[in-house]
Amino acid sequence: MISRTFTKPILEIKQVAEKIAAGDFSDRTTSSNKDEIGKLAETINYLGQQLSKFEQLRKDLIANVSHELRTPLSLIRGGLPPLSEILNPSISVMVIFPPPREIPTVL
Image (cartoon, rainbow, N blue to C red):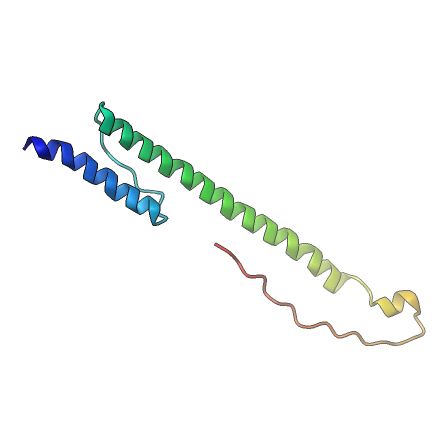
């Protein structure tokens, strides 16, 4: 019975740490001990919280960079007249752009 008191919080911390290592930063420990095991549980919870914040920042950065790269490419592709019209409007030149490619999304 006494060994269960010690092993239960440790097993819970182990399970949460394994989920964090697998990329699930939402799980938290419920240990309310005030000893070293409780401090370890608090640290694991803090780790999950911080990793969750960093993951959201990473996703936001990728979304912003992707948007910032698409905008100028769209303007160049659709908004500028052909170079032949700018240099010599009397010459008719047909410029064929390849179809736009999707920019891969990294999540």
